[in-house]
Amino acid sequence: MTVRKNILIIVVFILTVLTLFINKLTTPRTLSANELLVNGLFLFEQPKQISDFVFYTSDGEFKKADLLGKWTLMYFGFTRCPDECPTTMYQISKLIKVLKEKDFPLDDKQWVLVSIDPERDTPEQIDKYAKGFDQSFVGVQNVRPMLLNLATQLAVNNVMPSDDKMDHSHLDNHVNNIILLNPSGEFAGVFRPPFDLSRLSLTYQSVTSE
Image (cartoon, rainbow, N blue to C red; front, side):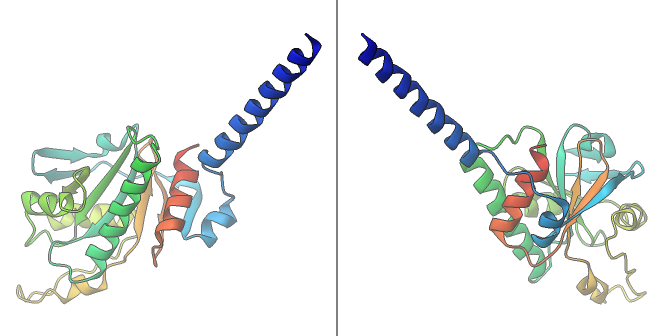
């Protein structure tokens, strides 16, 4: 009887250790501010408030209220972007895929592409472009004054186009950062290029698991 009892205790101990080990492997590690920075994420000590905004997607409006309750990755790009935009969007789409494979909670996560070429991108076009990378993306657009208002608050390059309607060279200078907004709708931080999937996944999970 004593032998059986000892064996049972050993089995329970082993199972407990295995459970803790597996939990440690599957639970994202919380990184320090310096570790986040080294891995490409600059996180503000105090998130920054942003003002209300209204943009349009293929099926309606996208407002500041739509940020509430969700972690949002926001990227500023345009459908005719030759290299940086599709490369970055592809990295985010790979991040989404990795998170899904890990069964990482995504109910309170969203991914938004804001057009910096509102003169040529329609809400339908930017949304279709965004969803080409992943169906969970939302592509949004509005007139340049609204774009500049939001872009300025999120430290995104807000170069104005020239008077020549055929000249779109201002788009070549846009900042290639990925913006992080917290569930309170505040500007929480910036993912800076170059984007590496392993580092992007590590930092994203660390911050949004808190």
